[in-house]
Image (cartoon, rainbow, N blue to C red; front, side):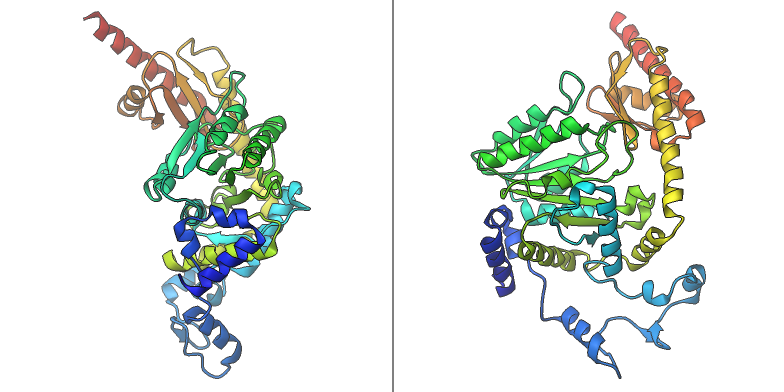
Length: 439
């Protein structure tokens, strides 16, 4: 093992031994080179006042070389904020501004200790870092049965984890914290579990309320008290899009400092929060009572970044930072939020109108981009196909009966027509099935 990796492991074992136990084999082996091209380039940047011949970029007239056909479109920005490599951890000011934003939006973090957010190439990259550092073959990924399909690729296929699913809703249509607790305690023999908490949930658009949130945290603590090391990932991709009386803060705040056997990791980003999907700017943040442990985790994270993408795109980090600092940012974001909330409310109004008989019911939703129908009289895939072929409507079939509808990308006046078309497709499939059964 590289001596730098061993030093980081020794630090974690001394400062937070339970976190050290959570590392995968890859996580244990990972480190960020202290002596190499990046470190020597950083030293030269400070001291090589005459000629700096260390960095792998081209310069001209004292600034990064660039093409006019590109810079002409981006003339509002200094070339140094576009064309140079961003640091592996991301632009320092962006990291600080995002941390300030987290504190403002999550007052529960005020007295908690957590790392400076590290910039990732959006949220999937952040999740893959978690997978690489903490997930080994056979480890349990505990998540609700209604989940984002990419989790299977990121944790199951890439790292060989076992997906342990539990029912998202209880009999009252609330988050099933009891099922989460049971799924966690079932990992007692393994001694380790990775929990994925995705609120607002994809695909259902559900966020728990305050009491449910406390029950989730209690379930995690019960597992830790039982001797299970728990890595808890709050996948906050749709953070802030809370339209009703639900949690309006990430559970990351309540999880920080909860127990020595609990490592909270917040994965979030500008991607959906600030409506910049193609910019691919995300963040990963760790919670721990030990500054030395946080520093060690950052070094291992930077090792993963250096060994995969080297660093994230610089222009999009500059664009996001510029937006976050703009005095119009909050106002414009509030305007988009109002549009999204209006669409969600309109969907509920339509679904509660009683026009659709007994053909479906919908899963509770109160946030995010999506909602899910539970079809009662027709199969989801057959309805999806019928919608495409006859009604020019795209939806997502999940399992036998669930149909995900993204109201985020449908203008409010069109929502009624959308659900009318979905209902017609359901009736078509139901009628075809009745005819087939009568033959």
